[in-house]
Every structure is written in C-alpha cells, then in structure tokens.
Length: 76
Image (cartoon, rainbow, N blue to C red; front, side):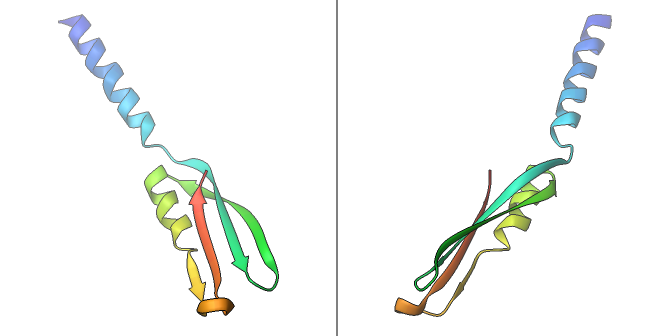
C-alpha cells in the first residue's frame, strides 16, 4: 500500500510539474516584398499552450497580391 501511494504521489508531482510556466521563444518572420524578410524573437512566459496562443496572436497579413506584407509567428 505504501508503494502504491508513493507511485501515485510521484505521478501527481510529475503531472503537476509539466503544466508549470516556462519561458518560450516566440519567433516572428515578416515577409515584405520591398524590404525583404526580417525576424524578431521575443520571450513569452506561460504554459506551452498559453504561450503558443499568445505567440500566434502576432500572425497578421496586410495588403494583397504583390504588396502583401505577412507576419507569421511560432514557438521554438
């Protein structure tokens, strides 16, 4: 019984630690037909899912066709 409780407690600790907040790098690449491509890296703190959501909020497209400026962000 003591071994079972120890195993369950260890498992709960492991699962609890996996949802802790961490620092993630959010890399945004902007592609502009006139200027070219630029890369911006920022740090996002949170759980992986929350950090991905915050980072993806930086995705944007302005204009269309040959004048389209597009920014795509992702967690590394």
